[in-house]
Image (cartoon, rainbow, N blue to C red; front, side, top):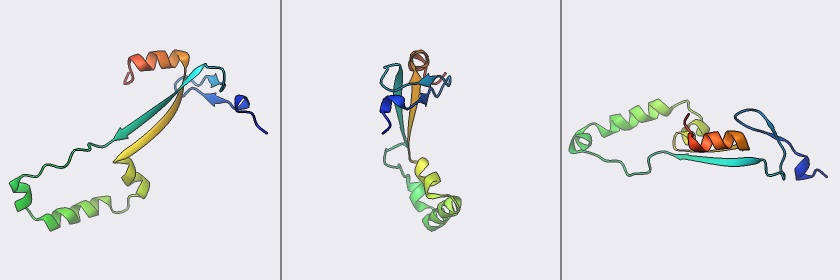
Length: 95
């Protein structure tokens, strides 16, 4: 039977080996959700050719996988960071 402390992970930023149970890393969970606000339609939008708009949208997504489509709306990412990389990342996540 494998002990969870025997499993090795790697820091997603620097590649350092991380060993569960030693308190030496952070699990970072990032959830990205497309704008959840209801769409805003103008009178001009509603006066247009809605059927053509729907067809254009269907044409644009044709050939895309279910995963590709889902990732345009919701994505969850789990990364592991060593203590040093976490300290840098948490202060400037986009840098």
